[in-house]
Length: 213
Image (spheres, rainbow, N blue to C red):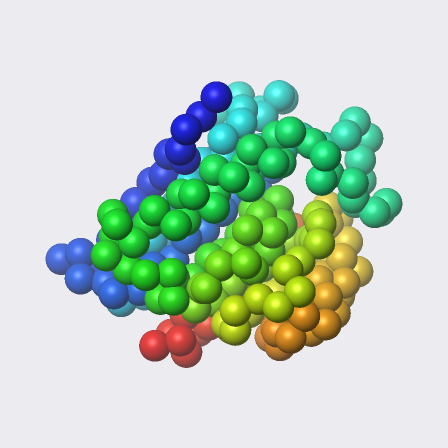
C-alpha cells in the first residue's frame, strides 16, 4: 500500500515562484498527462506539482486511477463510491500529501490552487473543498460525494464542454449549484468542446491564476 503520492515538479526559472498549482489527472492517465501542459501555462509566479494517482489502471498500461468505476458505469446514474476502499485510501493520501507541500515548496495552502481534470476534478472537489486553498479549478469534473457544509472561502472555476461525451454537462450544472449552496460562488464556463483541455481552457486557467495574484 502506498504511503505517499509520487509527483512530477515544474518550477519557474530560478525556482522563485511564491504560488503553487497542483493538478490532478483523470482516470486512466498519469502525472505526465497534465505535466505536458506546464510549458504552455505562462505562470512565472507559480511552482507546479502533478501527482500520480495511487492505483494502477486495470486496462491502460501505465495509466493510474484515484478509484475504480463499477463495470458499465456511465455517469448517468447517481454515483455511489463512498464505501469503496480505493476512494477512501486516495482521499487519505491526497489530503496528507497536500498538507505536506508547504514543507517541500515553502508555499502555504492559502497560496495554493488545486486543479483537476475529470476524476481528478472529482478528487479536487472532495479533498480540496475542505482545505484552506486560494482556489480550485474543476475541468470536465463531477461530484462523487458530499461537500463540507462550510468550507473556507476561496475562488472556484468550473470549465466544462457542452458536448462532453464522458461526463455529461448536467453534472457540471449540479456541481455549480452545490457549491453555491455551501457558500462558494464558482465562475462557470461552458465551452463548445468535448472531454478535453484545448488552448482556450489553458487560457482560462492562466487568467484564473493571474487574478489571484
